[in-house]
Amino acid sequence: MDKSAITKTLTQYMAAWNEPDDTARRALLGQCWSDGGVYLDPNVSLAGRDALATQIATVQASRPGARLEFMSGIDVHHNVVRFLWRLVRADGTCGDTSIDFGEVGPDGRLIKIVGFFGPPPALP
Image (cartoon, rainbow, N blue to C red; front, side):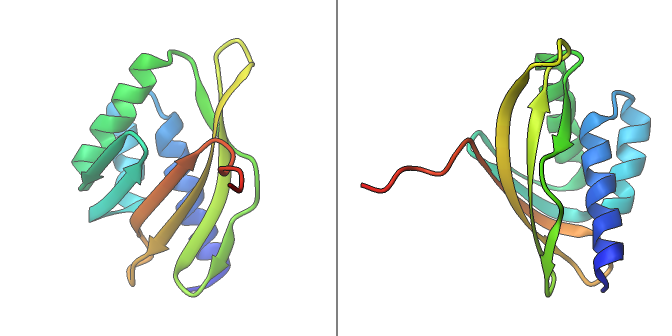
């Protein structure tokens, strides 16, 4: 799979996080997220497209008007990706930042995303 196809998949994934309409969000996820895809971040561990769609709706409800935006390009090697994003609140201020790592399956859809919020920990 080429980088442009993976970039399109990640762009659809980010669009799903920003889509307020449940039907449209699920359609986007159908294009970019595998049926049994696994999503992990410091607050949640889930599997499946329906579970991810529900989690996105929950996050949106807790942060009305907020959106996610890329803070970096999409780094790709083999079938693995990494990218940075940030939360932009409705008033334009920035909240959480994250570095996400993911894996793309043979069909071109994401099979795993693992996110880490905030800056990396300091050395001891």
